[in-house]
Length: 514
Image 1 (cartoon, helix red, strand yellow):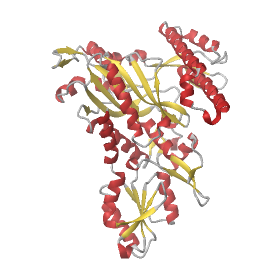
Image 2: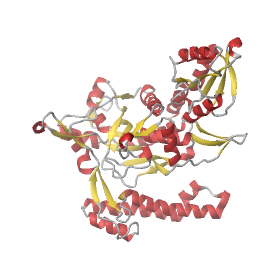
Image 3: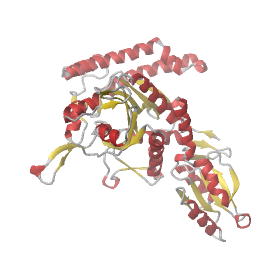
Image 4: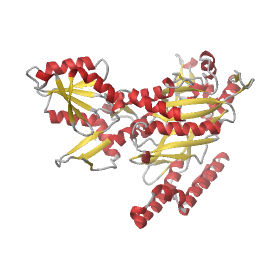
């Protein structure tokens, strides 16, 4: 078997996700909402399996991390203390010819990335098979100069932004030929959704849907530390919904207005940030690789522009069908959050260190992953078009078996002669342990193809021989090979191939080596 197309297009991914029950446009019967999606019957299972793997990796396997679930609605003072009300803005500009809206930072990024890509493409033509892209990017003087130019552009832009000289930012972009005079004025847009809390108009107060889950962790720092009797260093993990009124929400579920985050805030002693920043960068990249994703699709990208709370930041980027984009951020947040919450709340958020015999406000290393983006990375990586030896082709979703939405499909070869009864009996026993499917309609070949398309690792077929030998045929999704297995050994077979313990043992090894 060979792959017809290694670079699956985003349009095909979107189509497949809808056609096979993974992701639907939200409110589609009413023409939908922009950048809001629903997870279908298989999508929610895959999403929950990813969440489960992350939670077990971060909380269950570590004695120094515990988990919480904080509220979506929080006191407005939390967002004042965090800086979101004043600083959580995007700069937007409209192309007056096309009427399309663009974020300024993305325009600058794309301007530099396009120039870098031209350098790479030219080198590929000249050097041919001897071309090493990673080495070229690190050592080519033109690319180094372009990255320095990008840094200087951002520095100029933020200096102008700090002095509230937004009009000059447009002049800068025109001067660099990123835009021309056929663009509108730059506007500053706050990304938070505002709503009301209260029963009557005169009693209502303004609150915000949380734009991130991190602040729910910081506001609960003392509660968790004291009740959990946690000693620094320790972490608090959380999975939850966040909401951002994105100016430009595009690229399917990569950038949405309602999304889910998997975050962990790791509290450390002051000035130990460099050590732990490096540690969590390494750990988090290896978590993705443990799923069997190719290292080629990942890279670190250090921030040239740091958020107001950070003294260091890097992104784990993944090579999506639309290029390398952020999958997870690792940030050294210093003591910004706890210090500000202590100031605004007038409550002490210090930690007494029994070893150092002193109190201090802890520093924080954050790992913040977008669950929907992880879903998209795994889904796009796994979706293949394959040319078969017989000349036919198939579409197959080669998901890691341990997180596949459906673990096995049970088929009677034909819908008669006692075969369905045996198959249903197998289904009833295995459903206690795994998400499995029973199907008896259409030909066996069509049933195989459907299970390939939704990523089911194993198809179990009851045939006429099963009536006499109590064995079934197991067909492997990836190789399309099959083997006979005793019905009484099916549960053990599945445990050996799809149990979450397989992945968790890899994570334990990663922790032990680091």
